[in-house]
Image 1 (cartoon, rainbow, N blue to C red):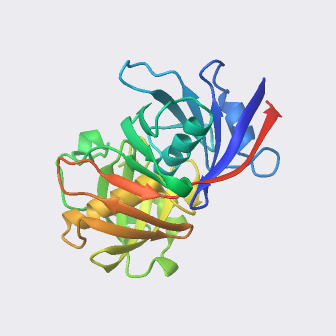
Image 2 (tube, rainbow, N blue to C red):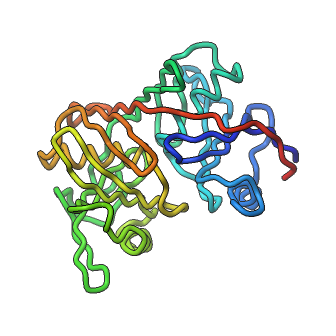
Image 3 (cartoon, rainbow, N blue to C red):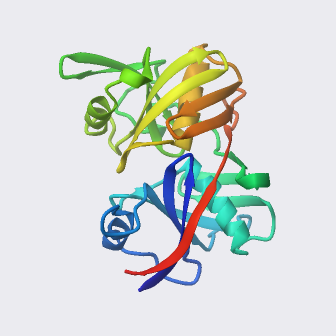
Length: 275
């Protein structure tokens, strides 16, 4: 199987993006090979454009993590897919309705690679995230070794735990992130965000992603962190989120409303590879 693909990134969160509307999806082993940074192309996630199942969607997207597992949502990846779909002629308009496992994503392609996406309404009930809790709470607690870790839990189509920290630069991202991901409290695993509130309209964030590890940016993680901050009363409706790879703008009016994210994309190169 020979795959034509584009290498793209959003704030350093990098992707292999390809058109599978007329071809089969790669296997788990092939995805792992693509994502391998020594022997393959190297990426955090692989996004494949597919034909949508619903008539009111322009394009479907299947999202794979680097380990071959499937993801329901990927904010930075969807911005890249929007630019890819437009440039490759898979859609005819700058406004695109994507069908993803995490729900419908509305994307608007702007100038200079900027894309605004609506990632849907956050899910906060335990069964919808999912987490092993009997009722919704403002925060949850787990013991990680000798440490007590408190976090908010949000689904943006994929599960997120948001840990408030005084300084992201010294946060135990790998240790705590891996421990939370392996905890049975999260039956489907979890993306773990470490959030530092700098001001009511500014947040610093690092994210340890499910099936990947720490990435330079995570779009759905930024949305989840802002939702958690808004619910705790610490953040305003419009928030700048600074990640290791760059900056996103997140807007959320409150419960029952969709989260909007605006950020850049970059095209790295086009190529093809034998799988």
